[in-house]
Amino acid sequence: MNRPIASPHARLLAEQALSRAAGAPLLGGNRAELLIDAAAHYDAWLAAIRGARERVLLENYIIRDDEVGRAFRQALVECAQRGVFVAVVYDWLGCKGQSRDRFWAPLRAAGGQVRAFNPPQFGQPFGWVSRDHRKLLVVDGVHGFLSGVCISEKWLGDAARQVPPWRDTGVALHGPAVAELENAFVESWSSIGTPLDPFEQPAADEEVGTVALRVIATQPATAGMYRLDQLIAAMARKTLWLTDAYFIGVAPYVQALAAASRDGVDVRLLVPGSSDIPVVAGMSRSGYRPLLKAGVRVFEWNGSMLHAKTAVADGQWARVGSSNLNIASWLSNREIDVAVEDTGFARQLAEQYERDLENATEIVLAPSRWRRATDHVQSHDRPPQRPRRAGGSSGRAAAGALRIANSVGAALTDRRVLDDTSISPLVIGTLVLVVLAVIAILWPAVLGWPLGVLAAWFALNFGIRAWRLRRRQKQRAAERDGPI
Image 1 (cartoon, rainbow, N blue to C red):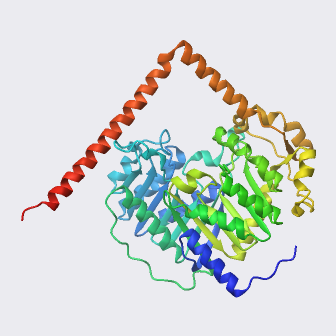
Image 2 (cartoon, rainbow, N blue to C red):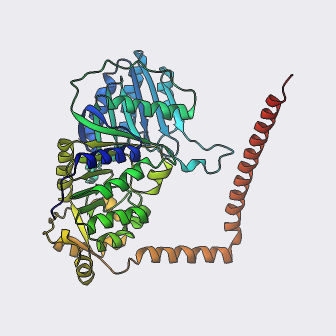
Image 3 (spheres, rainbow, N blue to C red):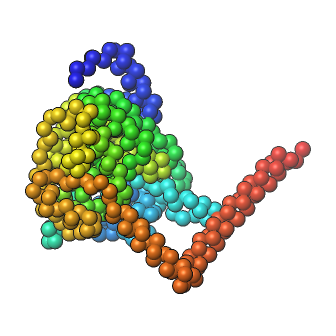
């Protein structure tokens, strides 16, 4: 399809729309380096921490008490002992069962500061819903990193059990964008307690790089990343290749992808074949059909876990970060992503995407459905790439028996056929409801006690909230009617 060349006025409107949607300006003069998988991340992160002279700011959803987590803690302790300012933010829920507060005792003893984001609080019964899902590191205001990688040896796989490393992507940044990463950390820190004093910024270096990008640090209810994802789906002219760990397609975004595909855009979605959260994988699969009918190509990764969150469009725009394509990331969590407008960086990410597809299985509709879905989709006239089928791992069993039913066909054809109806969610839902019905009839107290505890919890929180509001009203009244 021949498309007209965008005029300077159209490019200006696109620039304005991107800035307003993301809530972030375009910053030039940066250098951006792709980091592929956890081993490369950990080497780069630890090297930067060990070389720190002034400050280390670390924010991560999961910091686990294992060999990797302890290596990072030791590096931070050594920084603090030599007088470097060290501040760490971890997510309370993300680290629940991964590490305890006493894990940080050595760092606090060395002079470092550590804060947990959003632990349960009385008076906020739904406060736990918002999480700090960022993976962010800034060292000396010069070295900046953001990613989908958490600090856990789980990301490295298990060679002894033949479990390959998790597939994940991040970025190392130098240039003006690093100050934006630092500002994002400072805002997170201030949301938990006493703010940090302003940092002295390093002298600007005009020779850092030539990459233009936006740092998108989202907060609950801001939806900056959602608006940008929708806009990119609307603006893509040739290609839009997406990788996501926990894709749950909401109707407006699915419609945006479908519309792009019907307009001739090569839209592809790469998601995990087996997930560390099987219920999310099931919800993701339930949304394949409308995408496939519109001509969107869907692939499932064959490795242990695909945790990357990336997008590349038209060979000139790319996104990497912590945001998933679901409501939690778009509206509820603190996330951080970088949107890069650079052909060189976009080309690197597109090349990595094509390599990833070599270890993925394409999902297709049954033949009759496929013909009806493609009668009006020109983008499928070209022959599809044939991904190579690779061996599974111990994590694949967690995805359930549904994938086993199609494994032989996928091995022979490099494709897995999506049946007319996905019965797995229906069967699971039926079994759950039957079990609940039996329990409610035979042992009503088993359900009654949890409901009673839940009601008491909300009553306590609502009561505390009412008491606090009443006390504030009295304070305001006292200030208003103070001494004359």
